[in-house]
Image (cartoon, rainbow, N blue to C red; front, side, top):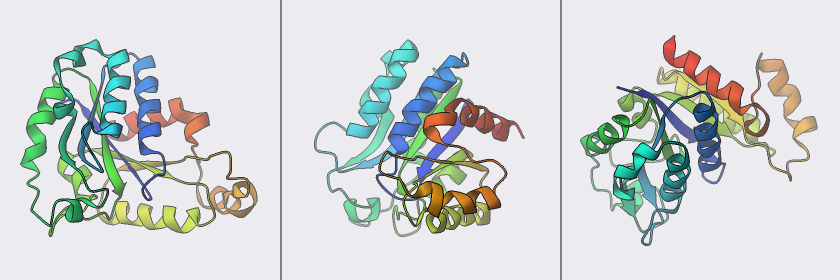
Length: 217
């Protein structure tokens, strides 16, 4: 079985796909064959936009993935842009659905990046939440968080959820150009609380290495 990394975020539109593409590039620079997988994508008309974006990026670095199709990369595509519980009308989602696709991808790579949908507490069905996927996949998790005012609360809540679920993780900030207040309103606390602070745009190689180190420990 290849190494597995689950990419999640504090909410939707935080930068999971952007970050996952950066990780594809970083791990490829390390000489690893990288695969991508997005178990569930909602808001899909015909082609899953995030899943296809990841697939095309991974193909540029790992041509062995050409034997796959987008249906292997995104197992469950749903048209309504909502939580899977709502988009799938509350129907149960057996996690066994994901295993066949994941096995096909893993046969072609050393490491697979699995991108979630929304945040950790997004409901999948009556029983499962998004946070149950990295536990099921036995995957190290990367939590992507934003730099807007309120990021302290959102980051700490997600970290607590991961720690309560005993899921090994790293976390990183995806700061954007309009996050001008971050340095004065939020960074002082993060610097006080955490020994290491990663930023996606500056530290992606260090983040990739930290994730590999977390897998091996």
